[in-house]
Length: 150
Image (cartoon, rainbow, N blue to C red; front, side, top):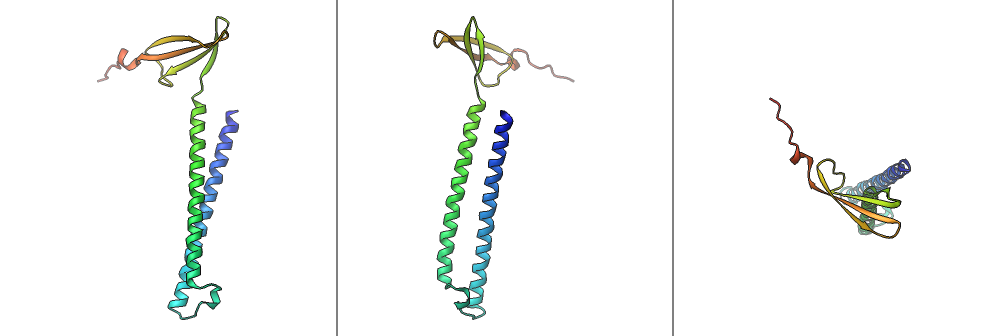
């Protein structure tokens, strides 16, 4: 199940990366085209009839296009960021066990704390469920400091 999530996450990241690369490439191509049109109109005195639109119209289209790509990239960024936050919350799952015939949910604070002294608090949630909160009172580093090697 975790393989599917990681594969899906990688494909979404890859898709977003491709979309950002395509938008950057289009903006660079448009900028090059606009520079070419401006140089041909003002320096080569070719006029603007060959470029279908005037330089003002090309600039308006460019402003619209760049604004459109900025909005698209912001949507992609915030969508990716929100998905990253939801997966982070999902990773912090509470483990389930059974204790005296009741389902026991164990939550450790701080997360992934190992070693040291813990206080255990049991809170009945219903007739079939109990919550055990393990709070680290003293970390292992304080209890058993590492000896300095000379």
